[in-house]
Image (cartoon, rainbow, N blue to C red):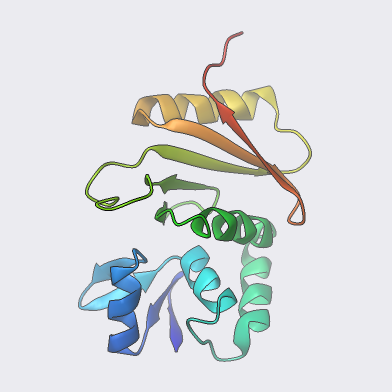
Length: 161
């Protein structure tokens, strides 16, 4: 069962926590596996974890904290569903690092920075900021925009004014 600890979650069952860790979820802290809300939401959505009140209650509580959480969770789920390891940033639900698929995928550095910009079209200013962040981190940039029901992904290779 997932338990809230501040803004993060941890798995109370040590056996399940070990399985989640092997699958590339969470970070270890003081002997516990801490999960980002997107990771916890994905595990609840797929039925691999449980939460007091169920997935619906979890989703509503996260939506109260951040209105774009359902969009972010859907994008996370779609990318994670392709077999890639995803590491969300602890400070932000709007960005995460994506590792290449295959064996040893966590041994290498991430290859993609996914930026979540819900809405019809991102502004040039927000795109410029994200390009700058991806460039400094030396990662390819993928921008996800649209709505929860229809997410579009754009890979940005260069940005000129």
